[in-house]
Image (cartoon, rainbow, N blue to C red; front, side, top):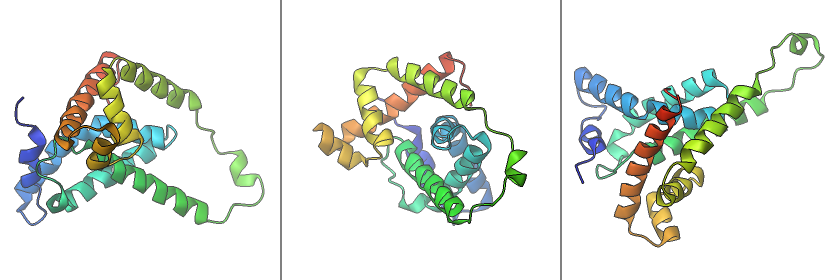
Length: 187
């Protein structure tokens, strides 16, 4: 098993480094995690791609700002990124819900209704891609990403070592990315 790419990147993602290192680190983080994170966030935002893009961007900024807190031994940053993105979406929803409702039909009558078909198609494609994974990979993604469990909590729930969880998450995300690309999902 080769050395995971994220270990090297985490060490060089310190906000106190000079700008060229920061740009390289952010670019590498974005290249590796943008697609899977965007697919995950689109589901959280019920298919609202613009909102999802904003959430992914904010998540990447928070990852860069929190680089010193990230585990340099982590096989993948996806569980951490997914947790941060999920919390951003929750905070956005709470902020929106805190605003008073508009009265009258005037402004709402002319608002376009989002087409839910795209979101449904994304869910079907992701579901099919997940079915293409091995049972162990599906199980580990279910525990870490869908159930929002930490690596330690997932290890305890599954009765396997933490290192095995990290390794499986890394390879499961890689396999899922390939399965999605085979189905035409490129972003």
